[in-house]
Picture 1: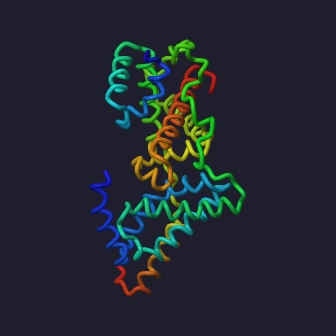
Picture 2: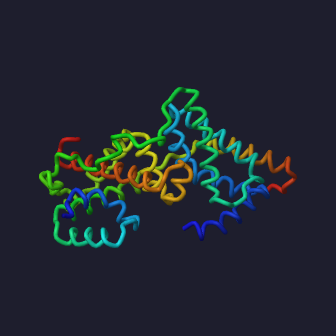
Picture 3: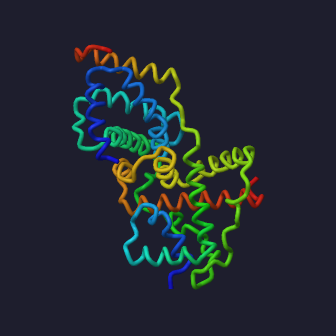
Length: 207
Length: 83
């Protein structure tokens, strides 16, 4: 809830300006995962992404006095990161993701699973009520992790920020410069793909 | 006619509270009677829960210490009392 986060942000920012190392360390640890994943949407390798994240922190340290509290602190940091990652991505001659929704961002469920009137022809296979063994659950996690990594960059980044990192849709839209509707399309498409991957996994195909 | 294709395409919108009154009503009525869509919805919830539990990327200790050193240097320069 941004309403609650903002006062916290102001307090945190004050501590950072005062040179409070413990607060800085917590912030770095808290944001590292999300920032690295966002950077990866724009640049070509893990190493390049980590460099962009480090550059971002250096810029954040230098610019602490410029933070005005008009957005949340992590949105501000996220924007610095995206600008840097974009510049780097362009230099690497990569296609900028999020610039437009691609055809693979549409149709959350394969069209052939429905009759023409839109009712299930191949309904979802039941797997969610199976007793969950610990080993199976671990396997399913590994499987979904792999599938998440192979999603198109825009879907992967939105699903990661929203569902794994717990960012709000407002933060994701601001950091990635996405319209709220597009953000929701990407999120839904990403989620349904992961669901489909679990369905394949439970039916034995994906193992 | 509100179909399963409609229902499955709206499940994230519904979670985010973005369905308008009329569509929300049709969605809810559909979900009351359609077992397959209920299954789909439950599986989507389960999927989201699994993603929530995936490991996050930890920052390497060395990188963390380098950044803290840079932070300390700024504090010293700007005359803040390091804590």
